[in-house]
Amino acid sequence: MNIIKKLIGASALAAMIAISAAQLSAEREPDPGKNFTVSDSPETTVFNLQHPSVNRHVHDYREHKPAPAAPAPVDDCAPGRVADSIDQYGVSLDKSAPATVALNEPYAYSYTVTAKQDLKRVVVQEQIPAGAVYVSSNPEAEVSGSNVTWTLYNLANGTQAPLELMVKATSVADLSSCATVTTYQDACTTTAVGVPELAIVKTTPNEQVLVNTGVPWDITVTNTGNFCAYDVVVTDTLPAGVVHESGNSQLVAELGTLAPGESRDIIVNTTAAATGEHCNVAVASSSNAGSVQDDACVKVVEAGLEVTKAGTRMQFVGKQASYQIVVRNTGDVPLSDVVVKDTVPAQNKLLAAPLAQINGNTATWTTSLDAGESKNFDVTVMGLDEGTYCNQVSAASAAYGLSGADDACTEWRGYPALLIEVIDTEDPLLVGEETTYVIPNH
Image (tube, rainbow, N blue to C red; front, side, top):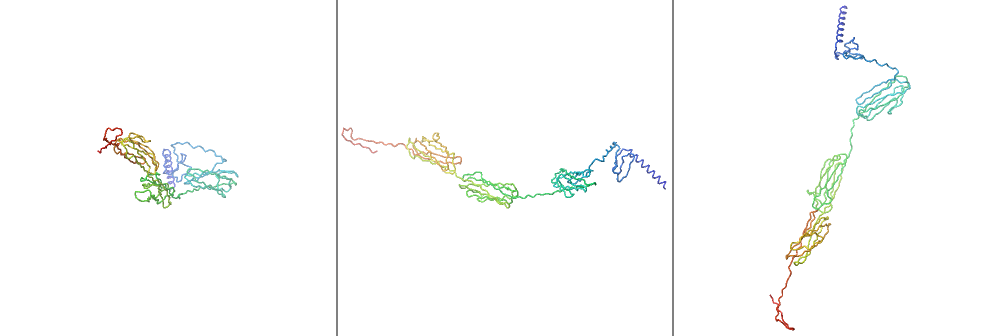
C-alpha cells in the first residue's frame, strides 16, 4: 500500500512539474479568478494561495521589466519623520513629527487641516505625551493641562490651515500622541424681521386752470418698508370747487397688498366747477402699516374779455364823428395777446386812430391787459353819404380763446336849405319914401 501511495505521489508531482513548465513557457495574462500568486523567480510558481503573501506579486514576463534598483543605504542617525492622517467627509488632517529627538530638545508636531467643503467651525485637539512639556503653538492654541485645542472658524472649501505644536522631551521614552479633528456643520436659516411703511404723494399737473376745464390728480402710494403692507386702501376727498363725473365727493380705491418697494399709481379726473383755490386730500391706510396722507392744490380762475363802443349818434355828411372803444379784462388772469380791430364802413372815411396800425378803413391795436384792467381807444371818421351806418369793433385773446364785439351807429344827414321870396309893392322909391314887401305863402 505504501508503495502504491508513493507511486501515486510521484506521478502527481511529475504532472505538476509538467504543468508548471508549460505555464512558464506560454505567454498569457494571469487569470484573476484563479487566486494565485506567481513569485518573482521564474523557477518557482505557487498555486491556490487563499491569502497571497504581500511580498509576492503577479509578474508578466512578456514585458521583460528590469530588476528594481537596490535600495539606498539607510542612515540610522538621520532624524527622519513619522506621519499619519485622518480623512473625513468634510475635512482631512495630516500630522507629522520627527522620528527621533534628543533628550531636552524641543521638537514640533506639524498639522495641515484641509477643508473639503465650507465649514463654519473645525476643532483640532492634541494630547501632549507623557514625558514631554508644552513649549509653544502657532497659531496660539488653548492649553489645558496636557490638552491642546485649536478652533478654526469659517474655512472655505479647499482652504488649508497649517498648525504647529512645539514640545520638549523631558524623559527617555517613546512619546506617542494622537490628534483628533472635529467639524461643526451648521444648518442655518435667517428670518428677516421687517415693518411695512406707507408713503403717499399727490400732485396735479397744473397749478392754475380755468373754470369748467379738466383737473387730473395723480396719487402714488409706495411701501417703503421691508415687509408687506396688507389691505391698502386709498380714500380721495374732493374739495367743493371740483367735481367727479360720478357725482361723489369721496372716491375709494382698494389696492390690496403692497410688497416692499412696490408702488401703485391712481389717476382721478375731475372738473373745475368754481373759481378759487381748492386742495384735494388723499389718505392711504393699511391693516398693518397705519395711514398717511398728502394733498395737492389747484387755483381755478376765470378768463374774460369785454369790449364796448360809443360815438356820435348823428352828424352831417362831410363832418367828423368820433368813437370811443373800451376794452376790459373781466377775468382773474392777465391777457398778453389782446387784439382790438375797428372796421369803418365804406360810407365813412377813417381819419384817425391813435397808436393803431391802419390799413384802409381798418384800425388794429395789439395790447395786454392785467386782470381787471381797462384800456380806451379812439377813432375819428368822416361821413361820405347820407344814412345810418354802424362802426364795428372786435377784441380777442387767442391764449384763452376769448373774444368780444360791439358797434356804434351814426345817422349821417345832408345840409338844411331855406328859400325866401320877397315881392316889393312899389318900385322904385325916392329917398325918404316907404314901401311894403310881401312874402308869399307857398
